[in-house]
Length: 251
Image (cartoon, rainbow, N blue to C red; front, side):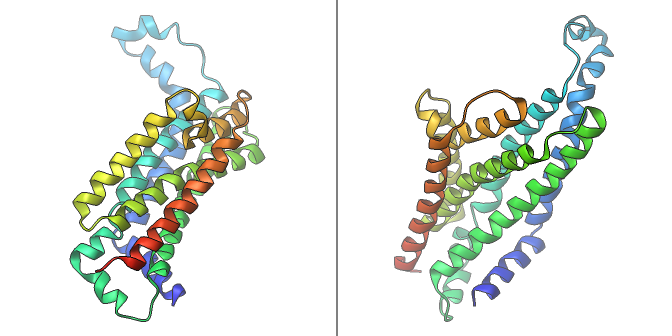
């Protein structure tokens, strides 16, 4: 039954273009980030109004390509995860399809886990696709990146974005309408982003995990084990609470 639920989620992601959108965006991020890092100074020099200032921009390096990819992957990744996940449960409850599904011999917790697994799989595929493109274009325009360190960075990025996915799924489970789910999802995203900017507190947030991953590629910074532990704990807690709440909720 769980395999059937998981297949249903993948088919729904494909039919609603969610999977396609996610993969295409990360494909563009992976291809465009090294290109932007390489040619942005040259483009600025070609504009008369800013050419004088562009001359002071140093020549781009492989570090610029890495920073550009990290920034784009995090910003667009968080936004996509929230937008594509916030209604997965609330929408079904609002339309009444959840009530029909739960009349069948299927665990409500299995429904939550299937939606989470489908979401994290699509997220992983997007990061793999974007990462491969980034590695190839960076090697062509600059020099090859260390593949092992890039894989570790991608894993940290997956965990970081997985926190936003899990919390958004929790909010969707708690909400009865898509409007409530959207407000709660964006509110949770804002809270996490604000906390990550606060000194000391930010050391325990997913944002610090992103910094740790990027430091592996740029050769600076320190390990952030507390952020890794807290991020994994948040994922487990969010999914557990979502399962428990949906099991007890009257639909």
